[in-house]
Amino acid sequence: MSIAALPSDRSGAPTGGGPRISCRGVSSGYLGAPVLHDISFEIDEPAVYVVLGPNGAGKTTLFRTLAGILRPLEGEVLVDGEPVDLQGARDHLHYLSHMDGIPDGLNVREALRFYGRVERAEAPDVDRVLRLLDIESMADRYLSQLSAGQRKRVSIARVFLREREIYLLDEPTANLDPKLSREIRELILELSRDKIVLYSSHNLFEAREIGRYVIAIKGGRLALFDRIENLRGEHFVIGVRVLDAGTPSALADFTRQGDYYLKELPGPESVPALLHELDTQGIRVREAREMNNPLEDLFA
Ligand code: ADP
Image (cartoon, rainbow, N blue to C red; front, side, top):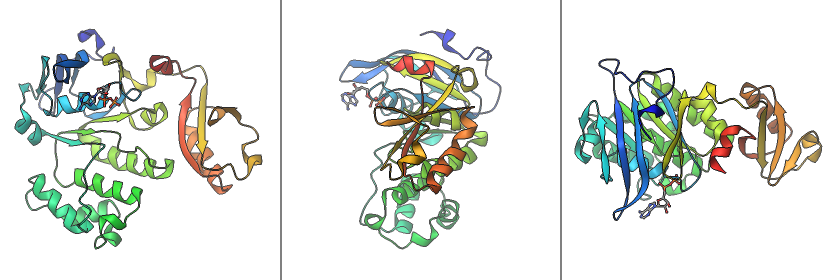
């Protein structure tokens, strides 16, 4: 894919002193076998860019390549106009892997201090980060005693210990319920005001909630790079997957499609109210996603 993959309303010309990351004709993979093919894009506007694609599309491989962990087989990655090695990338980028190893034998405060050293943050302000993530009350608890959602908060806290220009967040809300996912997205939006954030997801609704741009990857190729607002289906249909449909009457005006209960809404802005309504009726929503959008065809 050539530079034609740039969003239609942007020239790609650098805007000056802000952060920039470019991928030029990048092919990348493992043991010499490419997973990503000829990926090109230029990013110079601080915003959230959702890297969207089904499992196995190559999102993590893209992040590892941007972070300098995988060397491209062809092409190059530039940060602020310069090719970067792993060391250089670490100074500019924060890569939050979806498999962040969290040391179980430490309490939360110790873990954050440890991360502060790993991140080479100067005098990391652990208390500020504990407050920011609203995890002060668990500061002295061991990571092994926390729920999945609490552990996720701690791993997100790591992102805030040292400021970077560019953040690569690999499925930061995977396996979290919609309420916690939304809280995490709000924190990330806060963080991204003057940063470039690449945020991977396989959920189009989530992409709409957080992203200004979408970078869709299909089969290791760049399928689309556009502003999210250009990706409207004719109708907005939300699908919810529930833990148990305890009160089926609350779901009476939904239609069923596989594991999902579907409902047409005026637009994505109506989703929080719907989720709240289901919550008050005691229905525990495991996942909410946009259904029947043309973009889903990319993933077929
Ligand atoms: P995604 O993040 O979109 O789910 P990945 O980048 O993890 O996709 O995987 C893309 C492809 O690369 C998959 O076919 C996967 O099996 C392969 N892959 C991922 N990691 C490795 C690895 N360490 N060694 C070999 N192949 C890998």
